[in-house]
Length: 101
Image (cartoon, rainbow, N blue to C red; front, top):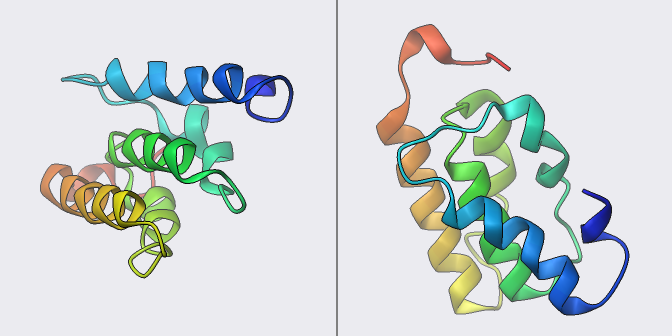
C-alpha cells in the first residue's frame, strides 16, 4: 500500500484500480485490504476504487462501517460507489463469514 502514500497521482491511483478491476468473482481477504478502510482524504477517483475493493471483500464487520461513511460525500461518483459497495457487502454476506479476516 506504499503506492497510496508516495509518488504521482497516476501511481497512487493504479494500485487500488488494479485491485478493483481484478475482483470479478474473487473475494479479497479483508485482512489484505483493511488498511484501505482508513481512506479519509483521498482524491474522489482514488476513493471510488478503494470503496469498490472494500465492497469486494464480503466482510461486513470491517468493510461495511468503512463504506457507510460516504453516502453524503460531495462527489457523486464516491456516493455511487459507496452505495454499490454497501449493496455488494449485504448481497454477498453469509452468517458464517461475518467478522472473518
